[in-house]
Image: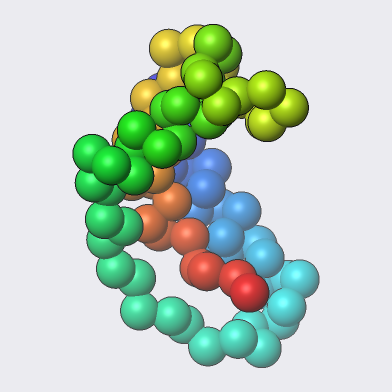
Length: 80
């Protein structure tokens, strides 16, 4: 499943870079996203069902590998 998600993310990234923006934005150096216990707890408290601060927020599905999703996003070109 993770490999399929990574392939999907890569293909969407390539499509956006090559088709949508026509390569107008140069390649950005990819760096690892720092996943700290404090940061992960922040996300978990606010974006999982039953989290203390989850009211009115977008939520991850129960059992979702949030750290895995964050790691998969390391290959995505940042946008501003």
